[in-house]
Length: 269
Figure 1 (tube, rainbow, N blue to C red):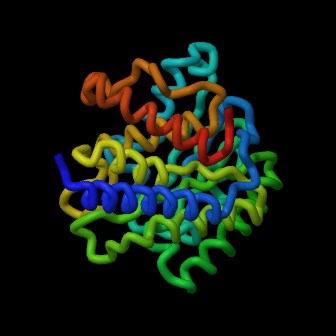
Figure 2 (figure 1 turned 45 degrees about the vertical axis):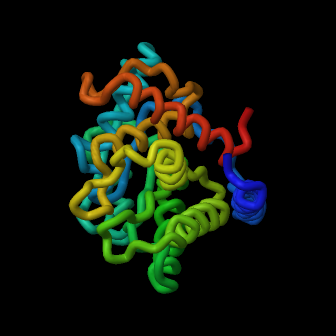
């Protein structure tokens, strides 16, 4: 049995840690948009970079997961993904991409998901550029009858050279602030990664070689978070597991993380 002084010290440390988390959560910028702005979107465009196209592309996994839970919607889904490796959002010609029929979708996109460069939140200049570009892209998307969603990227992990424990808060604040400015929904993928690592530190959600790009597990968690954020269904219990590449137990863990994070982030019941 530990001496009383040691137990008191451990209790105090635990209490301070819990208080720190509560304090941080209380002062985090809250999202203005807390519900999907498009009910079960079928025509969706993903615009981003290699975070999207790794592991056979995020949009494919979201589509399979949505289809597995909604057979009627599955028949109507038209997803497209426009990605440029290492790109910032200003590298994409959103006017061209969203023109009706331009990239093989004959009706306007209902929803366009925008992801910035992984380093955008880390410098003043890139944060300002991101906000400006999102506002410009959102105007084009809105003028064509669609809605914008912002994809909050995960923070770096070892061995990335720009690893910093403060990065996840910088990313969260940037995405929420910019989304609030244009009244768009945020998909809190970065927070889902953070929570998954907290619950299951043995899981490898990032590419082990660079600590930046998602591993297959990371892409799966991201897909679960997209589904939980944008569709009227929970990912928990979804049968899609990348065709058996992810063990059922691990898939269930990641599904639950995504659902819990989304509910807490948006304050949903």
